[in-house]
Length: 120
Image (cartoon, rainbow, N blue to C red; front, side, top):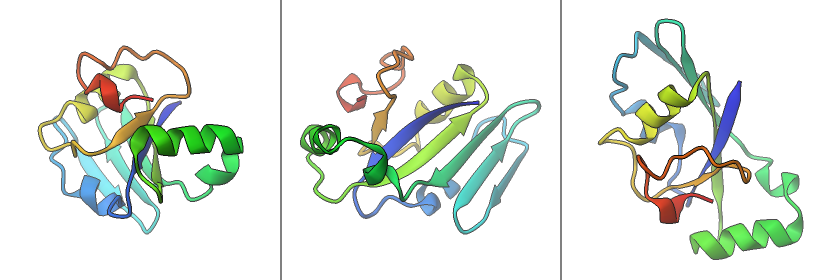
C-alpha cells in the first residue's frame, strides 16, 4: 500500500471525490469516513485524516500551512495500489484544482499530471 495526503480548506470532504467519475472504476463504496474505488485488481481509498496535525512536528505543520496559505487545514489520506492509479485519479479533469498533495518527501514524479506548485 502506498499513500499521499490531500490537503484542503474547510470545504474538503469525501463528497467532493464521491462526485468524481473514476475512469475504469468497477465500483465505488462510501461510508462515513472512507471512499473506496475499486478497479479490476487495483484500488484507491480516500480516508478522512483527522489526526494529521498531531502526526507532524510543530514546525513542519506550520511550514505546510505557510506553503498552502490555508489557516485551518483539512486532510484526506489517499491510499492506492500503484502509481498508475494515483496518476489517473489526480489527472482526471474533475479532480479539484484547489488542493495540495503531501508526498512525505518522496518524489513520485507527479509534476507531469499535477500542478508542481501544489505538491509538497
